[in-house]
Amino acid sequence: MTSNVAFFAEFAAGSPARSALELAAGAAELASQSGGSAIGLAYGAGAAEGAAALGASGAARVIVLGDENRPAITYAAAATAAVRDAVALAVLAPATPNGRDLAAALVGSLNLPAFGPVRAARVSAGILETEQATLQGRVITTARPADGAPEPSVVLVLANTFTPIEGGSGSAEVTHAPAAEDSPFGLATIAESHEAEAKVVNLEEATVIVAGGRGVGGEEGFGPLRDLAAELGGAVGASRAAADAGWIPYQLQIGQTGKVVKPSLYIAAGISGAIQHRVGMQSAEHVIAINRDADAPIGEFADLFVVGDLFQIVPALTEEIRRRKGA
Amino acid sequence: MKIVVCIKQVPATGADKRYTDDLRLDRSSVEAIINPLDEYAIEQALRLVDSGAVETLTYLSMGPEQAAEALRRALAMGGDDAVLVTDPSLSGADAWATARVLAAALDRLTPDVALMGMASDDARGSLVPGAVAAMRRLPLLSYGAELALVDGTARVRRLSATGFDWITAPLPVVASVTDQVGEPRYASLKGIMAAKRKPFETWSLADVGLSASDLSGATLTVVTDARAPEGKPPTERIEDLPAPEAAARIADWLAVRKLM
Image (tube, rainbow over all chains, first blue to last red; front, side, top):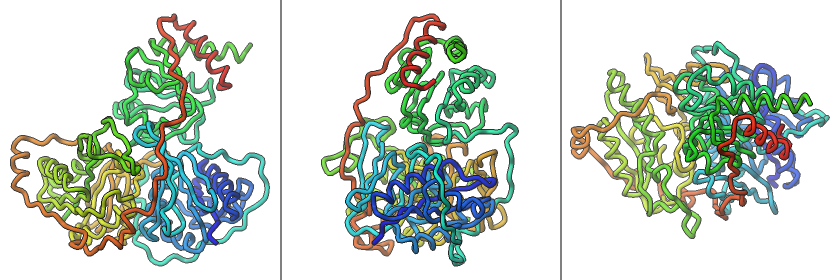
């Protein structure tokens, strides 16, 4: 019986990505519903060493696909071989470029059904069920594999869909992926690496995001947003307009062609709220918009819409929060 | 050097879209356009043609007969010819079935580079490029902010966690590009006229060596429900308040929700 739930666990510089911990929790939850085990598919620098520790996050077993700093897609052949043996009902992949590449390789190599990016998943009476926001968030669809579809289902999962298990213990059984056949995916290599001047945070891991758009007016306009983000323990993001203008690195762009985020609080300052931006943040739990234009489209889907000058309101809010924390 | 750009016709961004009674996206009632992110793939391909790196540019689409219009629009921007794979059994195709059909058509076209946009507006899984690469057993170079062709290899500039990488693989490859490649050009009047005379072929499923039974009813997934999102309270507004008062109101709002 195919009841296990596998998940991709990306490692970089010796540590698991937050997505690995979230998906470990998700796989453990689904596996408890299906009566199977959570199986990690770990790859990237530090995966071999960190694999066993995923046991504390929910994994019963971890298969190490590879342990080097190379393009994620080069682990596709090892992933395919591991998934073939995993007797899994579903494979969870983060809805990031690397996660999507590996998911796509599984779909194409093994002819598997694909879902997502999903905002919820469960196993009900042995059948996988997923929930996805479509049509710019105006419709929520529920989907499942067609009768007789091959297993496992490949599921792209949005960040913050599952919550990492805190304070868990135990260590996962670690095995190494069977030697993969020569795969064309393995031919991709990193020819050059360029580091950004400033360190950039991974927005997918932030639970509070303060994002700026065209209304921020320039690089220095992000200063007040950074102060507010620091006060709230969050990170700064941006719309495509701000990234295209060169005010902020593309790693911090949120939207259809940037990061897709699901923080518990999203503050949009000077962002009009085009559909392309909305796609990247529509799953945020609470949205505050600050905009001078009382008719900005973001007003339609914010929970709280503050009409006014962000250069006055944002510093005032930072000050107010600081004052209350000190009180 | 031969490049094939795969494009998808989608309902216009922001159009009033809905689901039909059989839980498929209703494509009959809204304006159809080239998937906006595919236009960046077209632009990238045309730049490679302009620079002399590519000799032949073909467009490929899978879709209903009306998708011919999207291919004609692409041809108006530039390029040589176009192929539409259309078959009644492809209605409602999922990522897997779409990849299967495109891979079969690409087996016939045998380009050095099969190029796609990074995602489609209506599905947003970004799975088709990688699935096509797996089916054709070719390297994948995805999410390129730029695609370059050098000495029998293709390379893409791709954002990394901390900067960017150039990732390279020997030709032939499947590649996808982002909206950072540069703004798509407009079709000129001359281009629109010329597009009408460019070679255009329509292929059936049989023409690419597949039958409807190969495609499991065009999908391995079923949508069982489509509903409005959970009722969310109407937007609260704060207007016409001096900044300190507005800030206090926002802080109250955050405190009630334990977000501070």
